[in-house]
Amino acid sequence: MKRHLISAADLTRDDALLILDTADELAKISERSIKKLPTLRGRTVVNLFFEDSTRTRISFEAAAKRLSADVINFSAKGSSVSKGESLKDTALTLEAMGADAVVIRHGASGAPYRLAGWVRGSVVNAGDGTHEHPTQALLDAFTMRRRLGPLDGRKVTIVGDVLHSRVARSNVLLLATLGAEVTLVAPPTLFPVNVDSWPCEVSYDLDAMLPKSDVVMMLRVQRERMNAAFFPTEREYSRRYGLDRERVARMPDHAIVMHPGPMNRGMEIAAEVADSPRSTIVEQVANGVTARMAVLYLLLGGADLGGEI
Ligand code: CP
Image (cartoon, helix red, strand yellow):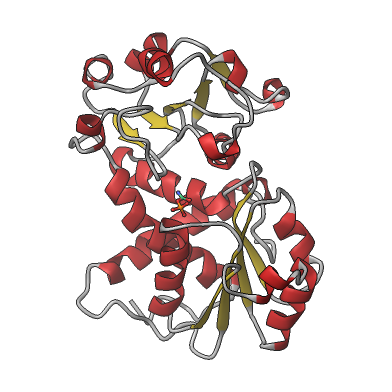
């Protein structure tokens, strides 16, 4: 594996399978009453969050702590960033504290790549602008594999605001590496211009895709990143691209519903669908801790797991 995890494209098929297999092993710890391993004792993980997060920030903290690493949580709010301190100076300050890994979420696409040039430790991208969110893709693949088995040939339909979604891009790249067949579904206004170069199919017709999907992954409509009208009304969007009970009934019996969170309940996904047995949304959150433990463990070269689990 490379030293940093900035894009899902950084992972070969062997790397991705190693992370998922390691996560399978580490999942056994989450079932125990004492959910802790000494593997990363003496290592320091810095969580550097310049953008809001609930799931990713908490799960990286839990993952590092379950591996016994020392954890420093940095939030831009309340830090010297508000006095104008740059990303580079913030990174060098953290470097001086001896960070072995820096987990970064930033509103600017490419910020983790820049950071990797300034610090000695491993950099893990926890979401950069509209670019990528590779550990979300790993936890999603881990969740699919636990529900459905190997991903080769599985049909995954990703629906919604692809234009602003770092989750969609990372999922397309990772799922293609793992042999799944991905179709993106969105209104024409919510596709990026270069989507034809992505390793996936593109469709505007959600209803046509539902009967042939093993997985339907709904994306959040990212209103905070929209500076123009991308669809006529929320009601119209919901009618064409929202997942409700009637649409779920057209999916195969084994098919699952995913969403990375946070959700706009009632817009891209009906509340009764989000809370149904087909939904893996809560599982995805739990699997996020396990998948991120596997990433930190492998990047920081933890001791052999065999004797510890
Ligand atoms: N899925 C995800 O990245 O959620 P948060 O923004 O809450 O971290």
